[in-house]
Length: 99
Image (cartoon, rainbow, N blue to C red; front, side, top):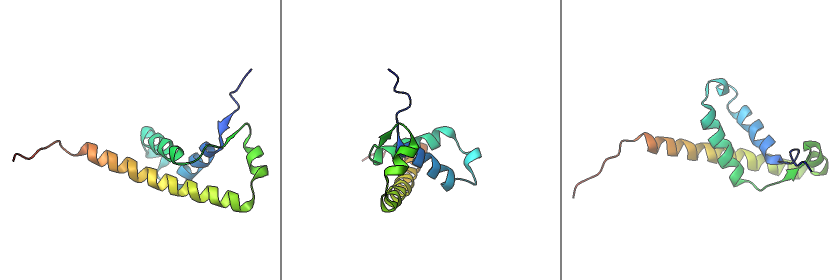
């Protein structure tokens, strides 16, 4: 039995949102950076597993689709902020204050 056609529908939406959000710079961006954003965004969203994307599109109402798109946009923005914050903290020198 094969299960390789099963995937989380939100993966497609998050990747699409990343491309739209970073359309100007995506070719010059670090792949690890984008993957970190995608992973964190996906962890903020519920899982919706399907075999074919068209299956999900067929069963969604217009309002449900709009809510999913909004949730994806918000998750990508929050994930980017989180990754940027972590990268900023990692680039700071380790210092301590003596008391």
